[in-house]
Figure 1 (cartoon, rainbow, N blue to C red):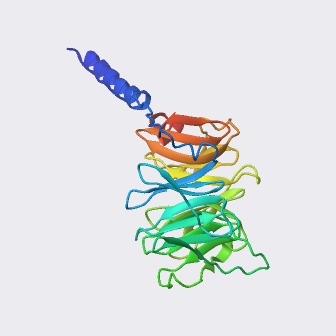
Figure 2 (tube, rainbow, N blue to C red):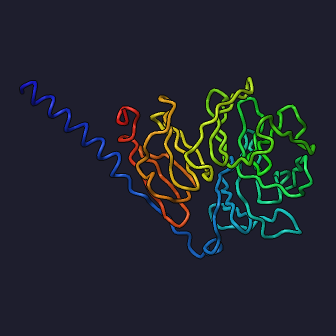
Figure 3 (tube, rainbow, N blue to C red):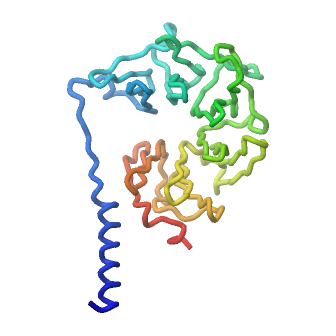
Length: 287
């Protein structure tokens, strides 16, 4: 076999492998018989705890799925239809729930109790959109009153949470913790990269002040995808700049980003579900 034929054969094998990985992913769905409790709900978030229970936050309350049936979980006696924006399971297995206007709840002894957060203005409401925990154990909250911080040294039974520095008065919509304790912060008009060790940060502005980040994802090619209120924006951490996105022209509100088997899955409001083959969107391809 000549050298040319060998190279051609290797090239064809590689192309077939890439095509198979990006096209042979067959989504599978399992219908939950007689479980129509969530059919009319606007599902906003989903998480799994260490016991295997699935927690589902909707526009009208919190639900738990135990593998057999759904149960509605009341957060308070006064408000039965709270809008649940986010559910987060921390490193200790504690379930936290962020709501719209009614703040933060913590699961304690199988009951959700409100975790009150100090506000430094006359407002009596607080919306929490995202929650994460760093390697040290500190909690970070994305809220309509800015970035909130709960130190690991605080007694979590106390009603305490501090506003964090320069993000006091800016509404924060999304958070993503990087491996080196840097925190991605999604706000209206920009995303920010905060170094939690020295409190320094860099801001990357979008072309449009009305664009808000709703989710982040860093793919296996080290690209940062911003799921925003007006589409999908791709940022190269290697080039430190925005680069063209495959569906950048689609003006859709993106709610969730997930990478699976070489593909980026994009959930949108009113636009359905999209998937993008990440093998064709590396920095090398863009350069």
